[in-house]
Amino acid sequence: DTEVTQTPKHLVMGMTNKKSLKCEQHMGHRAMYWYKQKAKKPPELMFVYSYEKLSINESVPSRFSPECPNSSLLNLHLHALQPEDSALYLCASSQETGTVSLSGNTIYFGEGSWLTVV
Amino acid sequence: GESVGLHLPTLSVQEGDNSIINCAYSNSASDYFIWYKQESGKGPQFIIDIRSNMDKRQGQRVTVLLNKTVKHLSLQIAATQPGDSAVYFCAENGSGGGKLIFGQGTELSVKP
Image (cartoon, rainbow over all chains, first blue to last red):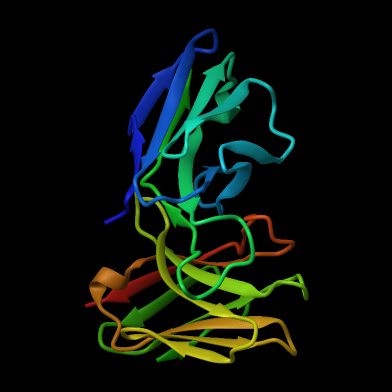
């Protein structure tokens, strides 16, 4: 079972709504990620946080706003989304973002939050 | 077992047979590769990883092979079971910084 917990599992929101997706991990990982996955497609990176600071933004539209309140939590604030933003949003974590090794710097994913924008 | 060509989106095998899922990667600088299994409605689940200084790594019922010369990665599943039915993604660490680049995925179906 994954140790990355995401809430809510399902979210339906209107285009004028403001909502948030939440992610939590208690593995002591200092890197956390948001990925977006459309049906039948691979996950696509959105944001990377390293030691609670945003280190990578893959040119994501500003209607998606990430936040890392502490080393265990990662939020994704949603505002004025479009129907094409409907997707599975995956949170992931790893020990750090640096050079990975076989000793455990693997990136682990949560079960995702299914978002539908209507 | 069946051997599939590169980028084949689906693979169907008989229960008990061995499965081989292939993946081509693009970045010669990638030094770390991961295989994930994603069941319907769930997030990607880590299966096995390998560093570029290795050619082969074995786990429980799974083996990953890496051929750096042709930038090719494969996942072998021994004695495939119905519970192995899922989409399998390879991923490479590309330019680093925690950025994983995923392959397009292969959907494995296991026939009883």
